[in-house]
Image (cartoon, rainbow, N blue to C red):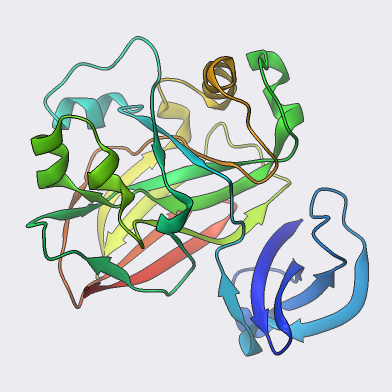
Length: 259
C-alpha cells in the first residue's frame, strides 16, 4: 500500500494511493479515516491524484539521520567508513513535501543534495533487536538530506548545516509493501544523474540502524530515519531542480530557490 498526505478543500487528509505506476493521471487517492495509517479504514471519499497536492507523507516528532553509511560517500568526504552508525537529528521544521522549493540560505555559499532511503516507524519502540526491526517499520519513502556543506565543515557538528527550514524534502508517499534490502537509488540535478547506487551497499542496514538508534532513544509512530547517502553529492543553485528516485517507491522532485 502507498500512503500519502494530501491538501484538499477541507484541510489535509491521509490517503491510500490506488492505481499502477507513478503518473498522477492514473492514480486515485482514497481517504483514510482519522490518522490510522498503520491499520487504515476508509471514509469512502476519493480524489484523482492529479487534482490534489501531495504533502510530506508524514510529520514526525523527529528525523534521525545516519551519516557516512555508504563507503564511497565516506571516501569522497575524506574520511574512513565508521565502524558503528553515526547518528544526528534534523528538526521536524526542516520537512517539506514534493515540488516545494528548497530554499538556499544567504548565510551559506554551498548547499548540497543528498538522496536517501527513508524509513518510517509504525509503532513506539525501544531496544529493538536488528532481527525484529521489520516489525516496527510502517514503510519507506524518499528523502533529500539537504546540507549546507560549508557550515558543516565550519561547525564540526552538523545541526546548523542540516537544520534549515526546507532542508528535509520527503515523499512522494510511504510504500508499506517493500523489501528495501537492494533497491536502486538515483539522484538527478536538472535531469543529469549525479548519484547512482543501491541500498544493498549500505554499511549498516535498516535492521542494524534501528537497533542502534533504539538503544539511545524511543522512536514514536511516524518518526523518520534517513539511512545515508551514496557518493556523488554536490551543490545546487537557485533555478535548478533536484529529483531523487528509488526503485519501488517513485520520485521526489523539488525546485531550488534563494531564500
